[in-house]
Length: 232
Ligand code: SF4
Ligand code: SF4
Image 1 (spheres, helix red, strand yellow):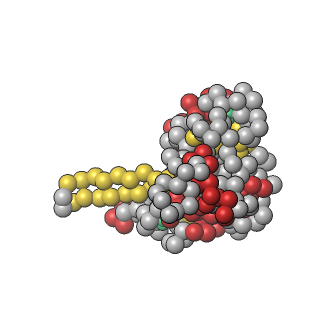
Image 2 (cartoon, helix red, strand yellow; image 1 turned 120 degrees about the vertical axis):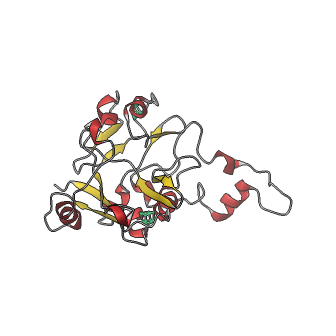
Image 3 (cartoon, protein in one colour; image 1 turned 135 degrees about the vertical axis):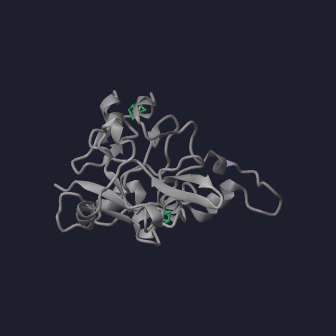
């Protein structure tokens, strides 16, 4: 059985945010919910200033604290190492969010995309949000029927959600959408245990780092090299 992981080559990353946009369009995440995100840091004093950009997402940890604390097994680990979430079992207790040191689990306070049920146009002469959705014949904006194969198309109020490593794509033999959308090929996905996989080769070639290693969660998102040429 494969054990999947992602490598992010920070030297190749150009900090464009394309991965964040790709995730949003693939998984139609609502405002303020960003499964794929980034941290930016500026250090030093002009003219010796350094900027760094670190893409972030759920780390699909080997020892995932969000899984071990979940009272209903809504957050679970599948046989290939993905940390996944079952909306139907979630009671919205947020224990997973408290246990997660990476802050990559999000709570749906309200029915997502509720604003698209508004039948009043925002200005005259344009379609109302509801009319637009009816016209396009989709349940929500940017609806992705592919994603609905593993997750509900419309996320319910009162449950949590997080990055799924695009399991609807990977189970079909495709890479996550953030990986195929990266213009710099900085994101690499594959089976960590397969010696012929690019992920395995890169982790052998470079000395990888993970976020918050001291938490002991054994993340499966690895970073290699550096955003700054000077510190490769
Ligand atoms: S799309 Fe690729 S190059 Fe752009 S920020 Fe994401 S990882 Fe970096
Ligand atoms: S919010 Fe849902 S997934 Fe998180 S711990 Fe509670 S039941 Fe489990």
